[in-house]
Image (cartoon, rainbow, N blue to C red):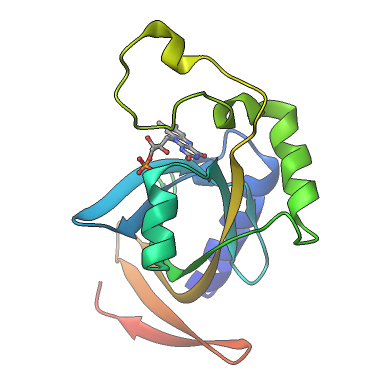
Length: 177
Ligand SMILES: Cc1cc2nc3c(=O)[nH]c(=O)nc-3n(C[C@H](O)[C@H](O)[C@H](O)COP(=O)(O)O)c2cc1C
């Protein structure tokens, strides 16, 4: 099986399985320093675009608005499978047809994460700073992939390939692991 297929299978599994290790990924954005943090992978499509949710006021949103190029890093410890996705992040606006679906998804679990009075990352000065209010600062963000790199560690051998999106197809380049 092609490494890309393997990655696709595991990423698709993580959509339904909350305990799957690909349920989380490390998101890298470009700030004054490279900025990395863990986020929940909310939806991965067949073409490997990835959606995560965040607070519109969080620093990562400003970083994405400034420079849209991001990376997503997934690791499956049991399968020793690493997937790196490089692509462009776009904020899904309230007018987008998918927005309501994602808002509904957040309402099931995590909407209160986007309602703190103070912006995430603000200095915590009083206990009240974590209180929530009516306004929802919810933003689904979609990563459209340009390059996907897959590394499969094995006892006998390691396998590594990079896939470049050209038109609608992925072009594989096998790499020295
Ligand atoms: C397990 C885990 C899951 C997380 N999921 C999210 C998430 O889905 N969205 C999010 O914005 N932050 C999430 N966070 C918090 C981020 O890692 C980060 O601390 C926060 O978003 C602030 O990032 P920023 O200041 O770079 O914008 C998660 C943290 C952990 C430990």
